[in-house]
Length: 343
Ligand code: PHE
Image 1 (spheres, rainbow, N blue to C red):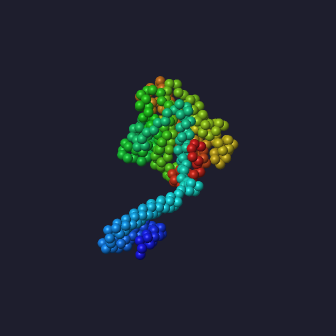
Image 2 (cartoon, rainbow, N blue to C red):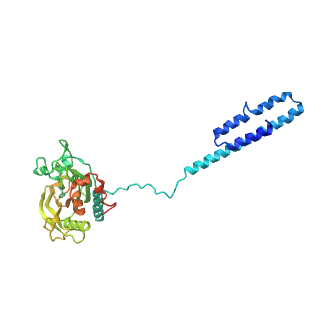
Image 3 (tube, helix red, strand yellow):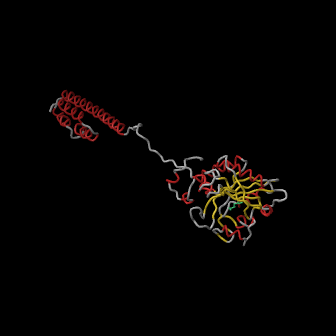
């Protein structure tokens, strides 16, 4: 085969390859140790020096040209591979994105936020405390000594003889009074509480409360009534009225149950208010002198009021939820009914 034919053939082969591997084979064939060009090299010895020179130059030129062509082809194949990858990996920005499910704030949390806002607006601070309490803070300092019959109503889970799961958030009030060392306090204590109770549509062994406490000089029952009246109007609407009924709590004297005029029928009577026009909503009273004394306050100089609200209960009333257990089951069908944010 003539040299120029060989060059032509090699050029065509290089032009036809479509992968780096094929290109490697073609290169090895024409430029490797067993290349047809080698045959010409072998012929050299039988040539005159003049002919040798021309042939050598020609072979070198062909080798150089083929080497260049192989390099160009290698680059061209690389460019094609990159182009193909770019084509394959393009992102279609017009495709719909992933929708991340957004949760809703738990209805109890929404209620807590709302009630906290109302009381912060009246100058209260929010106080929290431990759920595992001492018998002393949960009962004794609240005028409920050991053996007091009121303990029956608030039996609880005992960790040891003197350590228990708190039955009310009142121990936070005791702690705050001890810290305040005789100074006035105005606090709202939200939190979980525990009682030995049957679990049914309206009872749970674990639930939540807000308790409020205001202690200062000249605090009277009319302050309590004004505060609760404002709170109820903000929570259930400005047309709501409240009424006090006598009651008993060991830590308050006098003690009252507070009813709110039915927000469904406006007081005319309906199934929601059991046709009485009133819905019982919370317990309250004037802080018992013994409670003040045990926290080193002089009841002659400082008085106070306290109130306790069941968070589940007001949420059930406000949102017309018929079973307390809905709050704890984490059923999305229930939770998604409550939009995000405050309601
Ligand atoms: N701690 C009481 C309860 O859980 C509620 C309450 C608080 C009543 C403050 C009166 C005053 O039942």
